Amino acid sequence: MSSRTFSLITAFLFLAACAPETQTGIRFESGNEEEMAQAEDIALTHLFMVGGLADSKGVDDVKVMRTHLDMSFMAHTKVQQTFKGVPVFEAEAIVHLSQDGKFAGITDKLLDRVSVNTEPYYNADEAIEMAVDTYYEGWDVVSDTPTAELWILRHEGKDHLVWKVQIQRLDQSNHEEMPLMFIDAHTGELVWGYNNLQSATCTGSTNFYGNVSVDCNNYRNTYYLEDTVENLGTYSWNNTTTNLYYSSSASSAFANSNATAKMPLKHTM
Image (cartoon, rainbow, N blue to C red; front, side, top):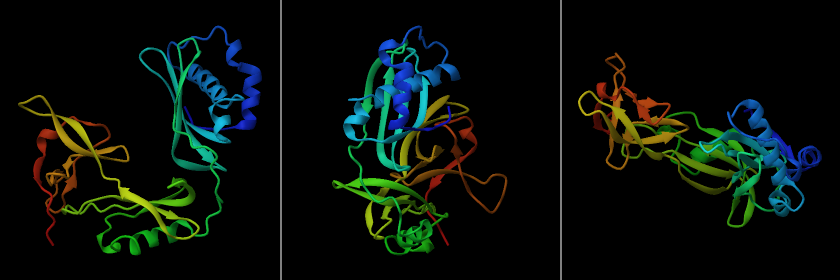
């Protein structure tokens, strides 16, 4: 389903039409678009009803990220908290409904009473420049164009409007990393940051041993056959004689990993 924003004002319209106490004839069976739209509306009504979770935390609006049906036919609606249209970092909730549409619980990571000026002083390009030149090691070690997104970050009890700057250093060296930096959009200061190079376990299909488990890294929903702890990786020449390419997959299952070779992650000039 496509995501949409749900505000406190909209909630009262849903309360009148589909209050939880008056729901009849609801049954989730196929997970089709109509059922998931119905589940989404009921979930948001529970979230924003007077005295509900969003109301008690002073949450004004959220963005629906996903609604899906699990194997037991329970419906789950995941929302991202927003403040004046800006997403709040790691502030999410999942509303759970039983097969007959009844409220079954909430997984809550919403932040209470977010308050910050949402007009940035620095723009995205300026934030990227500060992140690379001031708080990192300069453009020489950056392997791809950094990205910047405007978020609200609560750090050490204070709300900041930040540019979330993602830097990539994927140079086949022992220093590979993906620094994620939160640059204050008002002051230009580095509020917080961490290495966003994600480790995971993948499976690969081999000629002689069947499916095997291998270490890999997950970045932006793409999996790479790399083990940064052991400094090992899997690459392919891709039918060339000049360039090595990362072995990657859109899922954690690599269907044809037997044709590539494992080599140390060392870069030579």
